[in-house]
Image 1 (cartoon, rainbow, N blue to C red):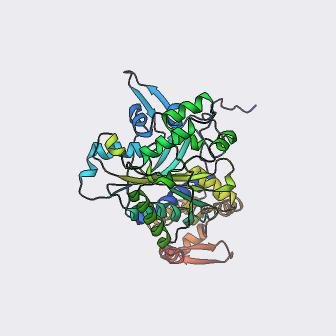
Image 2: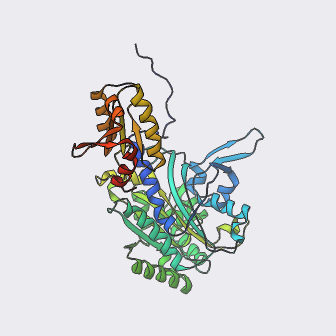
Image 3: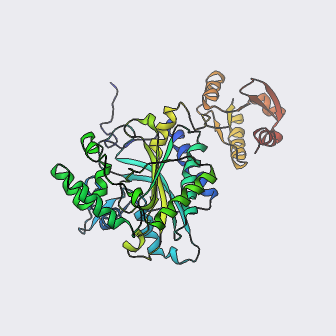
Length: 424
């Protein structure tokens, strides 16, 4: 009787195991490639922070803070929360380490890792979700907004994804948001809303426009929209962002009803949507947050950034029948026949890896037939075959796996031959 473990991963927390994990890694790294080309440096953040950081930075009235955070008390009774998003933690780190005082603004940062939200698990929505993100802090420039958006767009397209669209709007600034908030609140409180929705309208009326229930959407169909009540400065800012996106060749759709799930957004706000994912259609988004740093105790500096779901992007690629991962586990696979040949093959594998070539070997003393099956499964472009006769002649067999052609190469030259063949 086979003994099985009773332990499983927590509900809504996925494992990433081979071979599927190769797709996850390719997507995660590919999404940040354009950021590296634009000068964004890596920042590594704690997985948990003081609860007050998110309550103050993200917003008490948001679903993230009120319903979805994983919060716990440590042994001293201090409240901590597993990070539900990245921007508040980045801002905390910038303030704590004085990165905003370096004189090199905008400060450009990128990150990747797990984030946590307590919600009902479903396809593309996990309790431990994986994201990549960037933040550009310290300069309020429409061209910078466009750069951030273009980096996300380039990340998706670099993976081969093309069935998505960019939706964008402006949420105004401090000169027009208060008046609009009052106008929207007056409209909403005149509707026959249920008690919970009415309370939300009193605390944060913009959140009501994000309600997905058909009856609420019908009631708010004629609600005033922020984009129609922008101040002259906010309107000019938004028009310049769109002009820069046009110049960069980034297609977009203006969506006046867009509301992001976090309270700190101002001015430019955007989301990338992929309709083949059903209800969980958002694959990434972000916006500008002009007052967040000051709200967290830092300088009154503006910023803009995005967060992209790695899991959602993996699903989007699958929906389009595409893959970003290289199916090959290695470039070269080594087969040794005999103890002396194995000792030499192990050393040769080390030489090849030092030369930047990925190598796997047939371990466990398998015969030629089993070893070659392993070579096929590895996806290697070349298989090296070394036996006692080859050792005596100081040569090694090099088999090109696609064509099946095999030739003998002097052992002392095989590293150079493979480097040339693989373009290393």
